[in-house]
Length: 206
Image 1 (cartoon, rainbow, N blue to C red):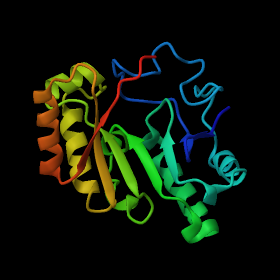
Image 2 (cartoon, rainbow, N blue to C red):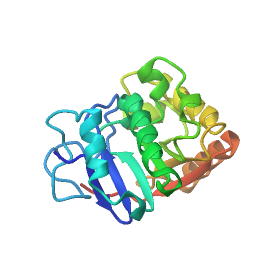
Image 3 (cartoon, rainbow, N blue to C red):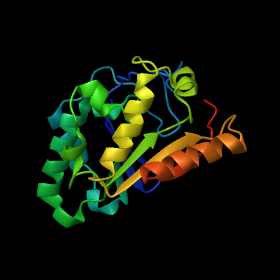
């Protein structure tokens, strides 16, 4: 079971397969075996416990990484309580030597967990990378297919706006596949209105 894995100069963390979206471009479709990041499958036969994840962290030379990234095949904020526990444990052990912590997320944490989690991120999470992916709710719903439908789009925008008050770096991301210059411009304006950055990611064919 792959819990932590290296990619570039960062340490990535894989805690869950669960996701409320079924994005049309997602690598998880038909890819339970293997991944672009590691020779081992990121598809978990079960979710690791907090202690297993902590043990995996402690088996690494954490100060040697440039960043810690909670990512994987699933939506990591399903395990947000565990993420925050892990960060607290690691900060207690490594202090200022702990690399910055990022969460790659669809921005639906408040929907998934049924509470406003943004204040809980303060002092723990350094970067949020939130998948924007479209400039209109209907396009977003067709592309990302969230279980909550079009309302998930506004929830994601609200999450991005509020989290910027607690997290130093909040970045919206879009995948460049089939995006016109007009669509990219519209996404850029959304990010500017929310007071966050925009990153355009290259499509990776699985």
